[in-house]
Image (tube, rainbow, N blue to C red):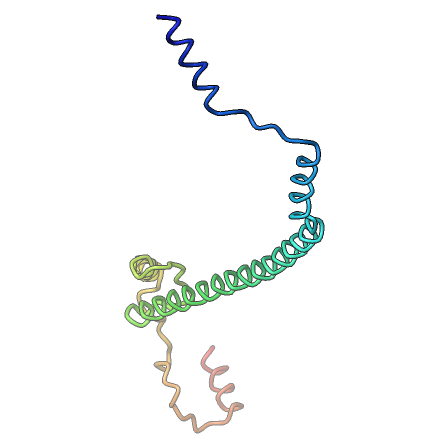
Length: 158
């Protein structure tokens, strides 16, 4: 059995004869291939320049994108501030607490602060204004001169 296998292998290799090349044929093949890539250095230089230009454009594009992102962030911040100011003004109008005293960023926070401020004011405010002898009437027309009023006061001190 081994003889049959060996014979088949020999027959398979004999069916495809091995090709050999002369030195001239090898030189011609190499020359043809080298001619195909003769402008390799020129193309390589052009490719490097293209890559540099593309990188520069990418840098400009990246700068523009960074600037656009920065401006968008600033715009978002301004919109957020306007929303917070509107919320504080609304709560101020409904509660009577000045909006400058409110520091919350949501309506619920501002309402809670306004309620706390109003409660504090109620606890610390005097119950009533002090009594004034003449009733505190600013429209009171005094017919006497200042000198006469002073003299009356001085006489009343006895």
